[in-house]
Length: 283
Image 1 (cartoon, rainbow, N blue to C red):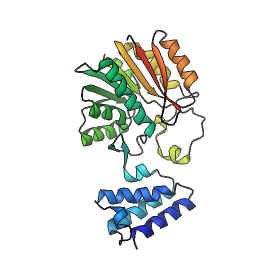
Image 2 (image 1 turned 60 degrees about the vertical axis):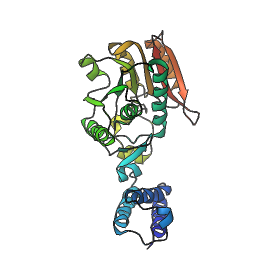
Image 3 (image 1 turned 90 degrees about the horizontal axis):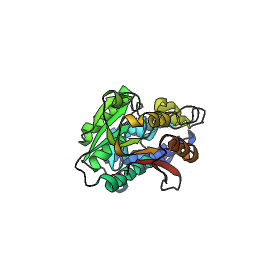
Image 4 (image 1 turned 45 degrees about the vertical axis):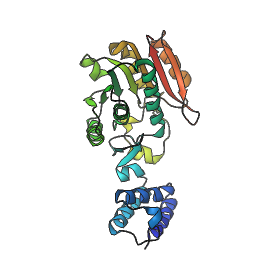
């Protein structure tokens, strides 16, 4: 059978299972890319035996709801392939926009500095901190996560991608405070989904709950960071967060409560949704 035939079978199986059928073709593209095969030129060729076996096993997993990124074992983020497994969240395109925003504010406030200290809080796979360091080597990044398993994944990504990020284990800002560390930039993509919100089962069943849910109102971990930020921030510093599209009013009010003198801004993503919050202090 040809590549085309297996893609058709994969799409039908995923459709019948109530999963996204387009993943069948994306999966085949990635399997071929790994072996240097141009699928679109070889669509009508006999399928490679190894690819056939891997493809059918992956389709079986995806029929049960397993996300494509976990089946592949990686996800593309900001042009880099990050190792992912069920110990870390799959990096989202919206988070790429947070990285871009942090790099823009870095240029604005610290572009003439040789070294800038960055904390990446709740790092997960390390996608934010590692990407910042790769895109701007002047950013000295320390990343934290409460999950030791997540930090193990992040360490693998750090080595694989040739970044120079240091990692510490602990809850939010606590490991930085314990070590008396201070930063110019604090970036955080915390768990922000309210605990009673209904989610797709492919997310709830496979992605780590510790990285998803942010208490009753989704703001638990923002409060934690806001409350302790003064222990780690330098005199001139900024914080940048990803946020839920419907949290603008609640999160802005909370930020003003803790940082009454700061410049607080909510930024929209490319879809026009409120997605990022920045707090600029001392500028």
